[in-house]
Length: 213
Image (cartoon, rainbow, N blue to C red; front, side):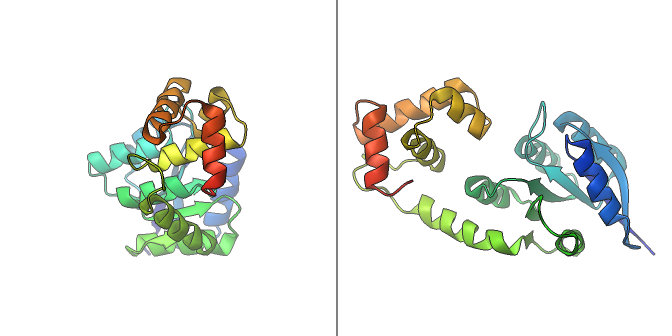
């Protein structure tokens, strides 16, 4: 039997061990490698050439999106299943556009995990069922222009706006999104310019009026 070879890339050792235990209970699946950060994930995938990689979206040094970009750019023939604790709609849409084969939450049940691995190995796309509605909602959200904007806001700008309305400062937003504080400042400046607003308070009011939070 040709087993489905899998690499596990997650910075939490307990998560990796738990996933490994579940996967290796199946006769047709074999875990051939593990990685705890982005660079080692790229190295392990290139070395082991697995059929499938379970890739955590948030890892040290290089996150799952960056790892995916490298693998796609270098045409590495491994099916990518993104593993996350977040129902992050923007990431979901972005990663699907990039060509990942699956997207699941870490609280997925063992059967769902096994189904995901087998499905992507067959060349199918697997999105955890409860994420499908989130994907549709995010697509509708970013394709519908906001009334009052001189230029359409990007999906990330809308997200930053929502966090401003929640009362978060730039540092908190940066930590939430996994980006630099300088990048957040640039998004805020762009929002103010596009909406012709003067300050964060006006941004928060605008977000509430447009039901972005």
